[in-house]
Image (cartoon, rainbow, N blue to C red; front, side, top):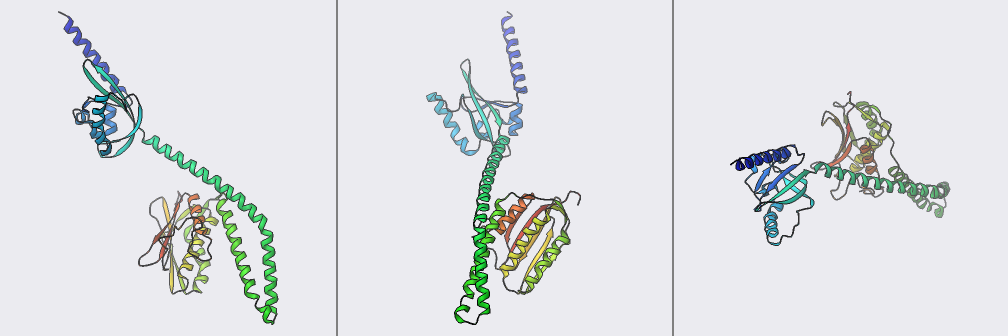
Length: 374
């Protein structure tokens, strides 16, 4: 007479223990029947997917999957029922799941099969691997940067040797060309005068070659910053005053607005180098005025300061990648200036952007971190 009561008590105790295991599990656990209907949804599953168990139990598990996976799932269950050939059961796989808010995220899924009497249940232990994916992506990016730095170091070493090996011949070539040019300038003989233009071209070409090689060395070398407080209003006015005579000679006006200027921590020499490149490019883009260049300071966020250089030139071609190495729109350009400017800004923990202005013109933005006490 006591057997049924004892069995019921044992089942109740077993169920209580099972629920305790589910509640204490640190992973999401989901159970489904052979039709894919959810029969079990523990507390960690609620947290992971954003559903209450009552919203999920009794419904098809495909509600927790992105559309592409949901379409295949029911067919997979049917194929397994017929063939008994597992594709997921007994394995650990990385797939995608979908939260209540529609967000699709990566999970690690471990499926198993169990039989209770004549009934079959499938259980899944699920872990969110978003953080692991991010860490892996960051690792890949760091490895990529490491390889790039190794290549740049090799380029730097090769460039240094090239500069050393060709430096003296180039200097000798320039000296000979200058000697020819001076003799031609002092002579009235027509045949000697005809040598002036070739000599000038030689000097100009060698000068461009030296600048190109030096630029490559600068880009390939490791950038060491000496950070100090830089007062932007003063810094910008000094930079603009240097370029105003050059601009005025081309009928170009340069205006500077530092009303929102502040203090940044930067390597003043390197920052000036990046800004000088933008001012020089802006003047050369306009070529001959009338035209104008505007230098502005803004504060997009409480933590950042933005220096903008706008010009009224024809605009930067959309087909040209502004910051790519050796990419240039100038006949005599090296394509290193903007690449080096980007390198400088990234080293400061900031950035650089290029945008088109309507109806024409270009604006470059230099973004820097504001001084903590500013």
